[in-house]
Image (tube, rainbow, N blue to C red; front, side):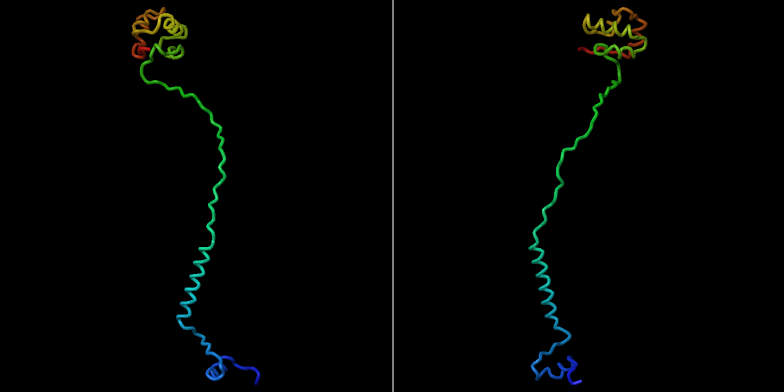
Length: 143
């Protein structure tokens, strides 16, 4: 066994006189500190040298929405203005049918707007009893 040597023992025996350095299994702490600082420096430089990624924005496209516009009929609470009411609106009043509603609209178109609720008595077919039945449901607003 002359050719096979046990290197660690050989190094221990001949470390002083044979020219070999003493390779200790435990490195001094300043070596590990230097390795750590070198590692941190390399990581820092690597991160700094990586170009920042450009943010990717989605392609802007117009959005087409199928929409339906529905007319909204506002129901006005309170008395009905007989100067602006249509024949259909007048028909909703108690005691006013389609024929009488048309006569009210025709009278208004011929003679101009009503000046008071009592002017309805001038429309043929409307008497005091009919007027009293709708008086609290109608009003006259100036045009």
